[in-house]
Image 1 (cartoon, one colour):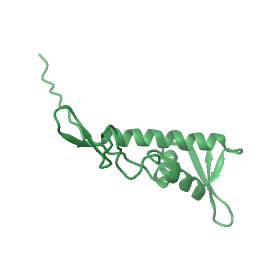
Image 2 (cartoon, rainbow, N blue to C red; image 1 turned 135 degrees about the vertical axis):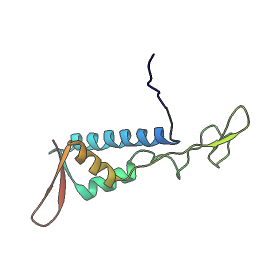
Image 3 (cartoon, helix red, strand yellow; image 1 turned 180 degrees about the vertical axis):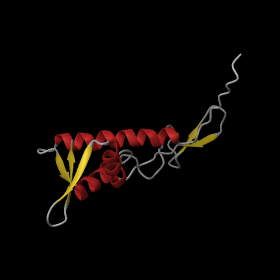
Image 4 (tube, rainbow, N blue to C red; image 1 turned 30 degrees about the vertical axis):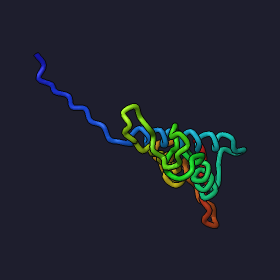
Length: 120
């Protein structure tokens, strides 16, 4: 007999947040690989990712999926109970710091104070 007890719990929206982080990481690495010298100006990179990042295609912060033409962001289920679909969007600043913490990029500063993000 084992005396180990396992407890499982869930946080609403955690899957959306994890997906957003993965999409953001993919986006930043793709942009860095496509650049000529494998580096980009930090402010430009943060702005581009913030504008074109994950969930940028969706208007507002809610996803309108199968709502039967409604634009309120609520989905309809078989039981008639509505559930709001949430999409999370990470900022470009957060994603650059995340890539730095993962050890994928470095940041170097020029003489005049501009910062560049370089892919390792």
